[in-house]
Length: 199
Image 1: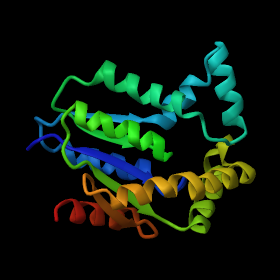
Image 2: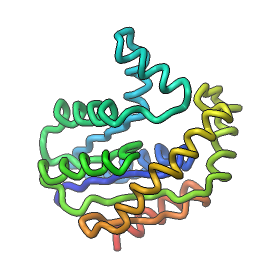
Image 3: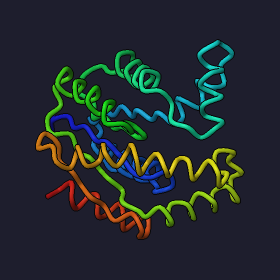
């Protein structure tokens, strides 16, 4: 089977990471399958713990719950591709892109590496549902970025920036757009993704 590219997109708290893991578990059933996951959230958390000038500025932006500048986001995932892609892997993006301009840059990746018709997996949940999930996660895991003020900032920039990107993907015939009902059980979300990927 030829290599595939998948982009998981959705509100903070929609369960993207869990669904990425379930898809990778499924793909790995093929012993010949190679996968490269590009997960910008964890890479950013690692980056802001550095001591250099750029690290400290990014840490301050992150502490306010704001969106990082596009050049930094692109640098992080582009470096991951350039350094780790060997050829023939399925590509899975989690947390990228967020802005429409970033989607344009990412679009050039698929041409360069020859990936046809990338799959956009939009886990569609309401703002209220996602916020409740994040507040519950804060209670359970003590995540500092799950304070209500920061949650609201992240939900705001989803509404202003990310929705524009989602609409662009939805209208772009070079991509296969999957609108997934996120407000159901983890198993049902996974099953809907697999059913729509198989159509």
